[in-house]
Length: 233
Image (cartoon, rainbow, N blue to C red; front, side):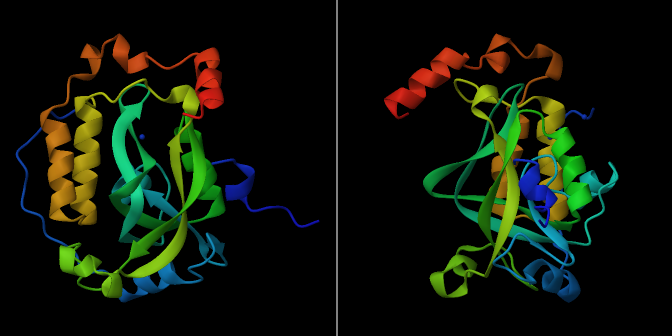
């Protein structure tokens, strides 16, 4: 029998204090990168690799490259019906399915071997599939760009979301080094201004890593998680 691709077998983010926001200069999406990202849009993987949606520390391609993962293409993407929050154990980010919301990030084209490397970093996360909208040259994420008739090309991606066992009982402020990394990666990727403002606010309200209190490790016990399941929560 043919082996399942790695993304199916696997199951499904540090010291500058915050600087003032610098002007955002968006790089025009390269036509070749856009072609690679939108090839075989209905399937996560293809002959030239697979699509990975990064929204936290891995939103910027340089963060991946610094750790040996080399995307062949990266473009800005919009995941409708998903919301970013800092509710992962330790004060990290995740995304959740929440009605009329939107999360911005980058769609990276990487290999199955590279996905396995990323999976090794993502402690307490599981892999899911989701639809992400991407646009070509000149996409700036403005309201007019998001109209039903001009929402972009829908592509299937994988992303990492928090497992129930690593989900805090309530959101927390991110710690400073991580928040800075997410924001600077968003600037690098050219995410829309409104989302960058959201990430910047997270930086401005972040706390030093060493000041994290017990609430940053307050995850439910297995019995509490089972109770939530039985209650349909």
